[in-house]
Amino acid sequence: MPFLALAAAAALAAAPAPAAPPADAMPRGDDLEQRIADLDARLFWAGFEGCDPDAMAPLLSPDFRMYHDLIGVSATDADDMVAGFRRQCDARKPGGKEEGYKNRREIVPGSRVIRRMGDWGALEEAAHLFFEWRGPAKGWVLVGGARYMNLWQWLPAERRFVLKQSYSYDHAPAAPYPPAVAAAPAAD
Image (tube, rainbow, N blue to C red; front, top):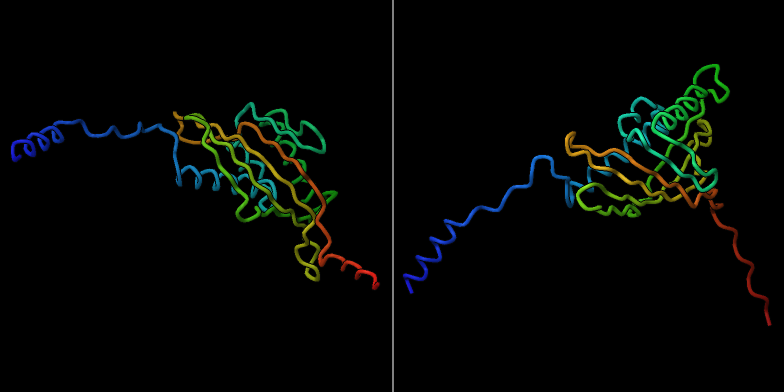
């Protein structure tokens, strides 16, 4: 028995150590989820509260496309997406046609699902809500919501993800709150 134990120990010592993932390997597990969540937050901050199209640009693949359920193709490439947000942000500046307009987006807690797509990307699905600033008296008002699906592509040489495609769907206005009270059933 001691010989077998010694032989097993020697075999284990001689076995190659498990290979570490290559330096350019796509993140997995919690690291993947955190990276996608961080990119999502940066993307929507740039488009909504931050109104900073230049911060959005490096998050997009040059051949990025966006599809929107209410208007169809809403961006044909990264430059088109950034230009659209630049127009919106410029309109909010002093003297612009929407001077002072503010909006924000919040992800619905617990709605995000991230699926690893092989070693080349990740698919993110979630729901979000949209708010508009209505002044100090009303504050932020919920105006609607939607679902979205983003396809993030891993760039191994750069060790980062870029947004390749986006689908925005199920847009709807905010439901009235509190809801109307249902009529009481008629007495028999």
